[in-house]
Image 1 (cartoon, one colour):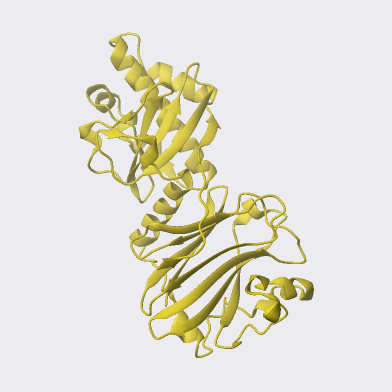
Image 2 (tube, one colour; image 1 turned 60 degrees about the vertical axis):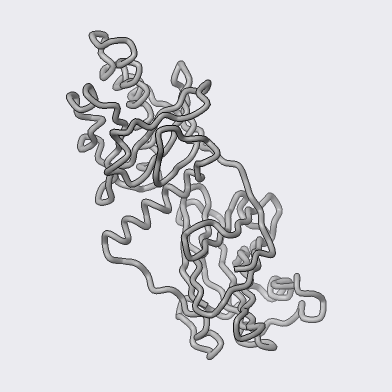
Amino acid sequence: MVNSTSQTKSFSLTLPVTQKTRRIAREFASAKLPLLKAEQIQLNTIAVCVVNDYLQMMGISTDLEASDSWHPVVRLCSNVADLEVTGVGRLECRPMKADWQTCYVPPEVWEDRIGYVVVQLDEPFREATVLGFIQTATEELLISQLQAPEEMLAHLHQLSQSSAGAVPTPVNLSQWLLHMFESSWQPVEALLAPAQTNLAFSFRGTDDAGEIDSYHTEGRVRRAKVIDLGVQLSGYSIALFLEIEPKSAQKTDILLQVHPTDNQTYLPPLLQLKVFDETGMIFLEAQARRADNYIQLKFSGKPGEHFSVKVSLGGVSMTERFVI
């Protein structure tokens, strides 16, 4: 794919450490244990509890008691900080002190894990920062290697879908050129007010700023889909717009935009739009700022090429798969 627009961001997620978590960590780190082992268990337990609270807050089911980190013999004999994600597998929650340069991942947890999340802790353990996520780990993890915490949520969701055999069929964009559309993809003017429609896609220039034909305009095809991010979009209604324009037998231009709908003016701040290539790597990304009335990404692809688009806010996301 050919990149023409890119926007990056920094990330981290600070969460409170509850009194219950601190109490459990103290109980697990018995005074009868050697000092270093007691500290290890305490840090591991807090990291696991923080991630557990976060996943449950995001509506992801977990089972603490099924985790090795909750088993008194296993946690005494091993350096484990795993969290059982119901129906998916074990997520390793590695603690990292604020003055550490890297996060240590012991060899005993290099296998049988669906991913690794790094949690930064500092006494007196009132807050914890989820620094990021990675699917595979080596003995020493750098912060620069980590993906945003929301990528962990997307990974868990994908694994959950795969285990249920619910991998969705990609949207075939070549069918759009034949005026064959999925029912969820509607004409642009069906989702935007007239004034908004006149502004949509105006980046192309004044010559076609007023064009509203979402079906076929000079070889271009435009459709839109309502996005449901649940409670994260309380008070907002948004939609994903996609335009394709064949340039040659081997090149198709693709434009993505996210717009507010229902006569709303602005997008919710921090709303993100990402494109993933065929390997699952982030290819392009954009983020809404205050008073943005849309965000957009533009790229080119070849016939038969696959990509995914994700719209997310506050750890909740919607992903759509496409094939050109």
